[in-house]
Image (cartoon, rainbow, N blue to C red; front, side, top):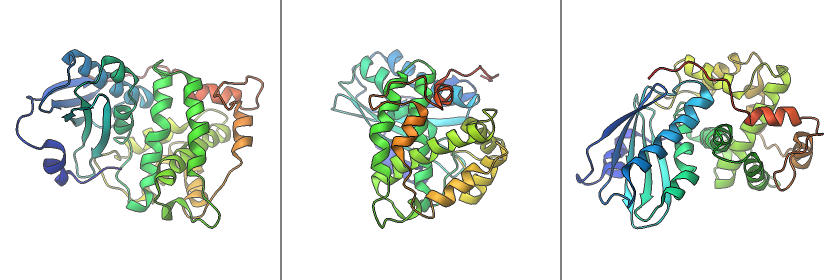
Length: 303
């Protein structure tokens, strides 16, 4: 979920000893990169490649840049891994902050998912707090999908992650819908389940002519992205207009306003996903499962 940019000076920038910013351009998106004091013990080119790969994950999934320009601040710490991240937006600008430990290696950067997750927050407008699960869930679902499509992650690893993670977002007995369930599991994994189910249903109801990406591109075309603030109703209406089927609105009413506990065993069976994430090709929705992670035809980009 994005946070107000007024917090950036205190949270993201800190003291003045930052490196001078550099400007990267990836598939039509300008990225103003600035690294904090005590830079990681890495070739700067490795950090640039890390940023470019994450930006390509998002822009190639969408076929376009979610925002024309984003700031990226990389504070450093004494650790040896990629730390937490956050996207600040909703007020006409967007800025991402992801910390990198000084002992991080190029292998850590190559395996990282945090920056791609944060860049997917550039896709949706900032929504009311009750629907933070839509924002976090989208980033949780699409981060591995996009990396699999680009050959940066194995499909089996992605599906295994969903098989293990999604149950953490299911409502317990007596729980309300996701709008009133702000727990970590509901926000991230309940949200991811929403978008997975939406992606499947859009493909089924449109005879595979449309998918989740079409819904998100419709939101971008309508002027929504991480630099704007929208109502949830406007988001759902714009997204459904992009597919021609009211999947997102109807699913939101089932999962946001009331609890939904789908039969996950049946879902994985129909998709042909084993507990280890391996794909079973004789499953009813095996072709749909493959389509979710299949590389997409390139779309024209600028920059």
